[in-house]
Structure formats: structure tokens, C-alpha cells
Amino acid sequence: MGDKVLKIVYFMFGDPKKKSLEHRLFNTVAFVNGALNIFGAFSSFYLENFMVIFLLNFISGILLIGMYFLSRIRSIYYSLFWPFNFIILVYLSSMWFFNGGSVGGNHYYFIPALVIATILLRNHNVWIVYLVYAAVSVFLYGIEYFHRDLVKMYPNDVERYLDAGGNYLFVQILTGLLIFILTRNLNIERKKSDSLLLSILPETVAEELKKNDFVVPIRYESVTVLFTDMAGFTKIAETMSPEELLNELDLFFGSSIPSLKITEWKKSKRSETPTWPQADFPL
Image 1: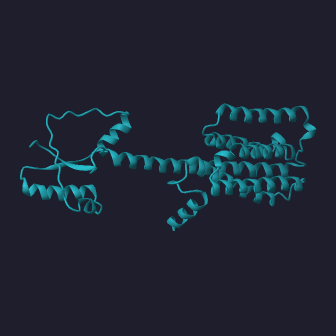
Image 2 (image 1 turned 90 degrees about the horizontal axis):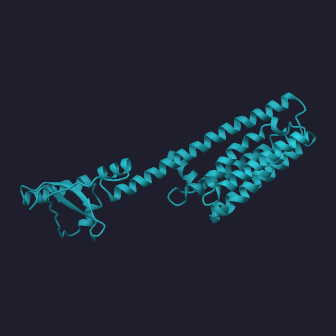
Image 3 (image 1 turned 60 degrees about the horizontal axis):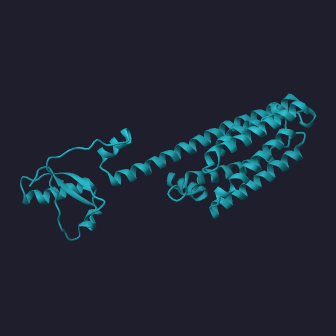
């Protein structure tokens, strides 16, 4: 069951092995926000200005879903960064004027929107992104302060609490989902990094490198490196774990050289055969 769910998630938002974290996050955010905006368009019937709210939610939802398909199919999410943020800011600003202003619930979305923009910005200038979002916020509060008549307020407290409370709850869910996605993807990236490191270095060296950012060299007065030419070695090695392979080699060579004990498995970048056994005494 879990594998099927993961396959569906990877199909919809991208495989972690093929798509970057930013790309998958963009796909997720665009799809989820687009779908929820379309759903929200049909659930705002109780509001006095239902038609305006409906059009804003529905049109923005369609545009976000369109961006999701462009990003998922054509892999151009990086080019969609500013159009995506433009749609989000226009939508939130419009909802500010038509749905309660600062006492409504839509201004809550500016916080996760900025967080998402920061994660997705990649090579974009972070200060420009922050400046744009700050300028929009100052503009909206300024307009409401000096021209309160331009902001459509709720006709009663019931509508206000229903709408603002629902939006606040949704922002909590959205933020939790965002953190879950980031945490999960961070763990995936960490596992990939650890796997790559362990494929190059022994585990003890890799752990020391991760902890200290450097490895203290160990000096050996003498060492024995055993070179052999074994028919079908690579094919046989593919079917065994490193421990099993060491035991087999130890058994084979130990019977020929009684005092030989293979203790480590070393890797070389220069050797055509990437690994060789190391004995624990000099010949």
C-alpha cells in the first residue's frame, strides 16, 4: 500500500532521483494551492460578494494548475518563479480588498507564500523577493488606513469568524504540510548523500568526515596490498555483501597463507578494479 502511494506521489510531483527538491516543491505547492482555490471557489457561497470571490478563486486556481502541468511536463519551473509569485500576490491583494482587509483571513497567507518563495528562489536575488512582499504588505495596509471605503468589510461577525477562522485553520495545515514535505525531502537528500559517501569511503572515515569536516590521517609503518586476477570476480562480487565477500576471500587466501588475515576492504579511484583486500601484516 505504501509503495503504491509513493508511486502516485512521485508520478504527480516528481521522482526524488530525477527532480530537484525545488522542482518537486513547486509542483506540490502549485497543484495543492490550485486545487484548493478551485474548491474554495465553490465553498464561498455564504459570502455577500460571492461572485467576485468565486471568480478570484476559480481563475487563480486554474492558472496555478496550468503552471503545475507546465512544470511537471516541460520541467520549466524555474522560469515560472516570478509568474507564480505574481499570481499569488495579485490574488491575495484582491482578496484583501474584497474580503475584509486586515480583519479577514487572507493576509495569513502572505507568511507561507514568502516562505515558499524563499525556498524556490534558487539563483534569484533574495532581497528583491523580500522587498516585493514587504512593499505589497505596506501598500495594502496603507490603502486600508487612508481609504477604508475601498475595502469590503464583513456585514456581520458570523461571516467574519467563519471566513477568517477557516483561513487560519487552512494556513496551519498548509504550513504543516510544507514542513512535512521539506523534512521528508531533506531526509531523502541526506540518505542519498550518505549512500554516495559510503560508496567512496569506509564507514569509519565517512563518519569522521561528517563530524569534523576532516579526517586525521593514520600512519602505517608497513602495509600489504594483495593484487589478484580471479576469473568472474566482478560477477561473483555483485551477488554478495561486502562482509560476505571479505569472508570468502579470507577463507580462500587464509588456507593458502595461514598467517594471513584480511581485515579491511579498501577502494581506489585509480585502480580499474575499484576494491582490494588489505592484510593485517606485511609480507
